[in-house]
Image 1 (cartoon, rainbow, N blue to C red):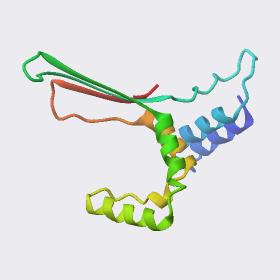
Image 2 (image 1 turned 180 degrees about the horizontal axis):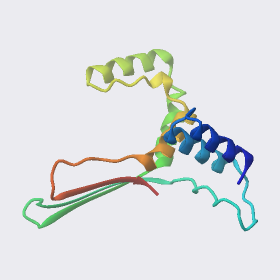
Image 3 (image 1 turned 120 degrees about the horizontal axis):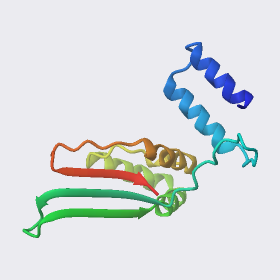
Image 4 (image 1 turned 90 degrees about the vertical axis):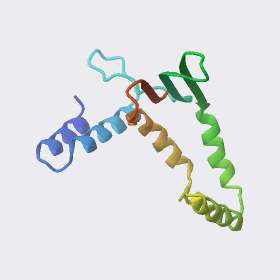
Length: 144
């Protein structure tokens, strides 16, 4: 076990951090450690995710055709490129876009979109859960 991992576990034991914070710190350590070939080495971090998937299965009829299934696969590169393109938009236009989004009920500040924030969002998508009010429907949101 690495010294850094031991320190994180000690902080958890001392009550200085929560279990969620400990998990995040350990995950960050694993991402930053180079691959090692020793037998007690930690598993390598997940490869970079390429797609955001939203899958909906329902027992309800969609137009009388039997059970329905929706399967959406969005390239995360599209999201990353969009953030880079947003940095090219003049501040006045971003302000107008923010105002229009707010009027539509989407309170987002486009001036705060940064590439590092998108990568952080993508990392946290693995932890995302979706609740569905219908017992005969299943929704999955994940990265692959």
